[in-house]
Structures are given as C-alpha cells and as structure tokens.
Length: 475
Image (cartoon, rainbow, N blue to C red; front, side, top):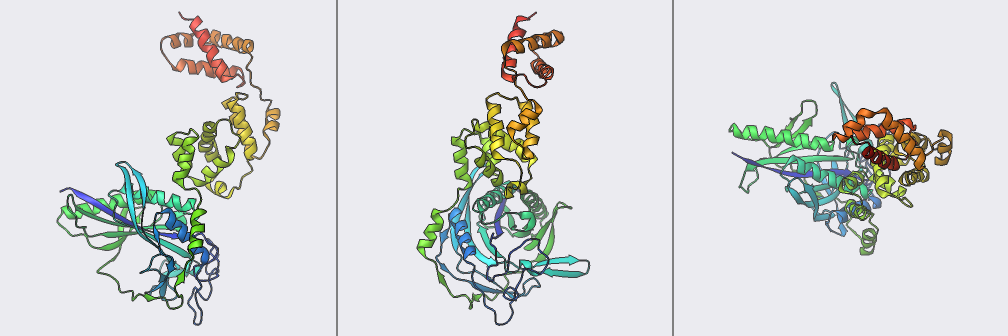
C-alpha cells in the first residue's frame, strides 16, 4: 500500500529582546548559570509580571510578515503544569487569544510552489533549561521567562524536503525582521514536528508522533525521513503507530521514544489574573507595519533588477549578514556581478559568520570596492586580486598594497605579443593539441603566458593575441 505523509510544524522562537517577557531580568545566552533571573521569573510570593512592550512589537512584526490576522486586544492565559524547569508551576501563554491567526507563507519545493497555512502565532515565556549529568539533574533558570513566540502551521506539508524548506524560509524571514537571531544550535529557534501517514487518497489523518526540539535545518530532513520509514514499516507489518513524543538521535540516525501520549493533558487553563487585557493602538500597529524592514523576497527581486542570476541571488539572500555586506559594498561599484562573486566566494571563505553578523573585521569596504573596480577595468588580473586580498583583510589600503607588491598590468600590444610568441615557441605540442580540438590546450598556454609574465599580462588581450597567433601557426 502507498502512504501519504502529513506534516505540521510548531516552531518556538526566542525573541531578540534585552529583557525577559514579564520581568526586567536580562536575556543573555551563555551567561553564568542562574545569574540572569529574578524573583518574578521564579514566581516568588508578592511579585507581579509586567509585559515587555518590545516583545509585543516583535511579535507583531512576525505576524505581519507571515500574513497573519492581528488581534489588537492582548490577553494571556495561565497554563498549569508541574515540571522541574517551570519554577512558577505555571506558564503564562496565549492559549485562547493568540496575537496572530490564519496566515501563510509560500515556499519553493521540488514539486513546485506550495502555500503553507499558519494556524496561529502566540506569545509566551520560555522554561528553564535542564542538564542531566549521570544520576543528577541540574537546572539553569537563566532561560526562564525569555520571550517566545510559538508559530503553529497547518498540516500542509507532505515530505521531509518540504518541511525543511518551510522552516528554512520562516527562519530567514524572522532573521530579516531582527525578531530573533535564529541560532538553532543555541536553542533560539526550536522545531517540534508532527508526522503521520495515511493511505493515499484518504482524508482522515493517521496517528501522529511528535519529534521534539530539532536543532538544525539538516536534522529536520533526517528526522522526518527516518520517522516516515519507521511508521511505514509498522503499518506494513500490520502494527499500530502509537501517539508519542520522540526525539531525533543524530548518532543513531533515528527517532527515539521519549514518552507516550495517551490523551490530552488537562492544563486547567484560565485567564492570567495578573495581566489585564491590553488594547493596542491602531496607530502603533500601523507604525510598525510601515517600518518593516526589507524581507527576503523583496531583496531577491531587487537583486534581480541589478542583473544577478538566480544562483547568486539565492546565495546572498539566504545569508542576511552576507547580503547586508554586499549591500554596503555595491554603492559606486562598477560590476555588481563581480562584487557578488567575491562576496559568495572569497569573502564568505575569509570571514566567519560571527564576524559578518557583528561587522567585526578589519577589511575596509572602500578598499575592497577599489580592488573590484580595478579588476573590472582590467587594471589588475584575477591572480593579482588574489594576491592583494589577504592584505585587504588586514585593513591595509589598496593603493599601498599595489605599490608594495609592485603590481603592474601589462596591456601594451608589442610587449604582450613578444610574450605570446615566446610561449608558443616553447610549447609546440600545445599548438598541435589546440588545432587537434583539445580545448584544454588554450588554457595551458594562457597559464604558461601568465607564469612567464609573473601574472602581469592582461588576460583579455593575452587571450585574443594567443588565438590570433595560434591561427597563424595552423599546421
């Protein structure tokens, strides 16, 4: 029997704020354990929560970018349960009145464009973080109270690749908004994926399993693929899929049981009594909408008008920090395509993602721009640019580097012709190979010419001269 995969995804996204959702305690990843927490986060008697306005602003930005309908009346609910990582014994969330509902994003898949509907986006606070060491469990309360939004999709995805494309695009949108830093490896963005199989042609959903806290885009595809195989094997053997929560084991390359789900848990929700409903001003909402930053699709369209091809556009837009670097570089640039090549190649290799994000590098954009323009003008060769670039990374000036390295581009016809003739005289076999249809022969001769000129021969003129002289020496 053939089965159809049905996938829905819940994404927990930490908001990029300086303080917690309901307290003034700082948000700081990697700080000494239990140093970024206060009495409100821990639920001490007599303390009251106070809503973080910046967190609401970022949640609204996310709603707008994901085409969600906004509820301007902010209401919170109390979700009661007792885990060691929940210091208050309850979580403040938006169970019944999410700030955003009924949205969508469009993704590109191997099967063509796909619209994934988004059921809701709601605000809540994060839990503490547990560490299990041998027979002990340690708790770091720094994360408790960190502002979160949870984004819940409809079950519109049908394959591992579609799930990966959805999370990748949504993450990129949120990073362009500066709503989150999107660092899945640090837990800033975490995915729970619900997967079920059903016989092809049927409408009823099968029994789903949930894979918790997937921490990378690549692991989404691996986890979903392995779970599809596991469920299919059970169904084909006549066994039932149990409704359960599982996790993906990157070592075993398989999903592992965490706990069974026998039914809905009674969280005893009720309206949060310490946060009265808050009516958002339509003027404030409109101000946020009108000041939204450029999103990935708009940036891609802008790059298309600059003449970049689809590959370059994808490479740039998928990495916001690199794209921002490119945007800062291209004013007064003579060849945008050449600038994109350098950004997607040498720049990306030389600068770490952290350096790009924090703009923490010695390279001066004005000097890199001067080098790329010189390369476009054929004042230097590609090889010479490769020699210059390491010096630019140290913060040196382009003109000083050229003087120091004694870089010269030989473009004078008679000088180049002499070099071409010498090169051909020294490589008679390559002349025969060229006329015998071996394309690599020309590349070899160009290389020999550049070697002879110590990289100073103008490549374009040299190529033309070589072809002309080769035609004269046809056997």
